[in-house]
Length: 183
Image (cartoon, rainbow, N blue to C red; front, side, top):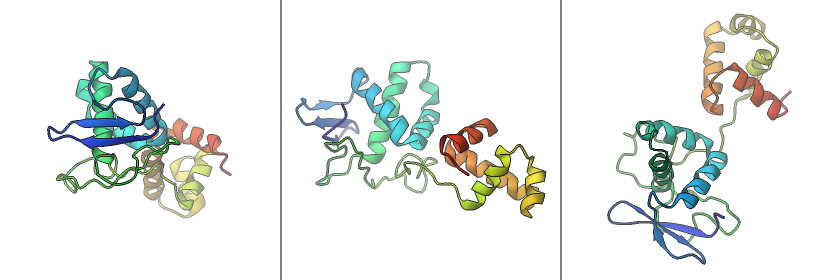
């Protein structure tokens, strides 16, 4: 169980894991159980970071163990290696990401997607209005006419929702609508 954990950065750039009641260890590819539990939890708590890390390390996908390790270590390095007086994962399993002073801040393509990523994005009221009509089966042009917008604006709202919600198509948007009981 991921509880009462503090991560520390080592001089060689690796991550050390300090968990209450468990021997301190340097995160390695062979820590299968920890890595799998961490990644499964990240998928729920930080879905956008999880998705972006998959993209970042896609070239290693064929080596599943190493791929999972890179994703886990990548998140830890971007979110948990600041020294402070607060556990990174507390006794209740809550994650407390830290602002990491990264030398690549502002240059990194993943800035704000992996580090400091939101737990979830909220879609705006305008996007919800567009989504309501998507769920009703209307085309972009029909939605534009009904909401007095340009078809291009509707297209932009649709694309923004796809990105914010981490889905790939209209079916994903519709699924989000029903899973969240939107009206």
